[in-house]
Amino acid sequence: MSLVLAIDVGTSSVKLLLTDEKNFEKLHAFHTPFPSGDDSGGIIDSRDYLDSIWKGIREWLIEALPNRKKIAKVGITSHIQSALLITKTGQHFAHMHRWDHPIDSAVSDDFISQFSGEWPGLVMNSVLNPLGSWMPMRLRNWALTYPEAGKIIYENGGYALQVKDALNYDLCGVIASDARSMRGWLNFENEVDAQLSSWVGLGDICPSILEPQETLGEVNDFGSEISGIDEGVEVIVGCDDFSAGIHGFASRTRTLLNMANTTEHLAVTLLDKKSLIAQQHATETGLSFLPKCGDLEAVLYCSTASGGVTLKMCLPRIKGFPLEEVGWDEEGYIAALNWLIDIMGARPENGVDAEISFDAEIFTKRGLKPSAKHIGGWDGDPSRLSPRVHAWMIFEGLIDTLHPIRVALLPFTNEGRPVKIGGGLSMIGPVLESRAARWPQGIEVVATREISARGICRLLGIEVEVD
Image 1 (cartoon, rainbow, N blue to C red):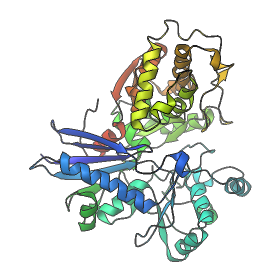
Image 2: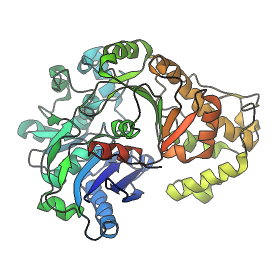
Image 3: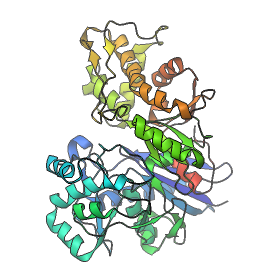
Image 4: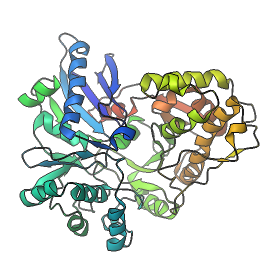
């Protein structure tokens, strides 16, 4: 039986899932090969970055691919909202600005001046957070940072890609993307809004837009050499990691989904006939809405920078936390969590009994959208708490932050079904324990870190269980 390979390029690690339609399955993850946000500021040499990803994949396939088994299809997902520019011949320009690279205040001020703070590109069937740093703002920031490169792109032509698009180009030499990965930039016809294009100042740089499950091409000789994948293997377009993760739940519509990773998401998928109502609800409540895109169902959701970010920022505040001993690489993070779980014990029967309460009112003017810089806060001095109570407050605080999002999604949710949880945080006992206690419909763990890879497998035509 032929195999499929799903590649998930996340912010912190690359996850690989090699599987077939029967009983063969291999999983692997390796650290994302560029500095952390603190060290790189979200800037990276894109060619070096891609080469390092391929090196990790190539080395793993040598060991993982069994004899007499061949890969038939490949699909890739990645983080999005990056400024990654290439020429029409595939040459990489300057550095890539990752999604978390700060936008210069001059760019955001100019955007407000030009468009009164309203995205003209959002006149479409999506509803997105207007305060987000979507593609046009990020590309404008890139163009001002590298004016000489921007001039060459403008005069000679080029394309703005996402990481998975650039990896696809390496494999099969075809430049394209999907509407989900380019959201915030396209109108009803999947074309770039003319006002935004003029403001960005890089010319016509949008690649062809295809559906995520479509075949993009086949692995060519260069793609085979750089990846270790045989020539002739089919490559699909793929999509962003959020959409892949939601698709990975394989849930019925109206089931509440909690994708818990570095950032957290609460979402429900919807039938197409509910799209118009969902659009209006999103506009009124501060939720976001993405319409159906190929095999990807319509989704109503909200994201928050709580989750892994909150844990990383808040755990060192606990008295006795061994930060200097464990560090923050992947092994250190696991060691830190094990230390935390050891001191926490069972969840207090009546929740957290402390005079100091978690402050969950850190939201933007839009209503529900949590601040991108939210790291958790308390009404009082947490240093007076015992380490055990302090630790439980952090985990309870994550739920406090998600609470208004869950309430806003309830009209589109079947409350008789448990909340499905997937992502890296679903591996952490206290996360599950606190949510099971406080979410009345209960919880069901669907998958752990490989939830987005699982979604790509579904786009490749294979249903898999990743527990």
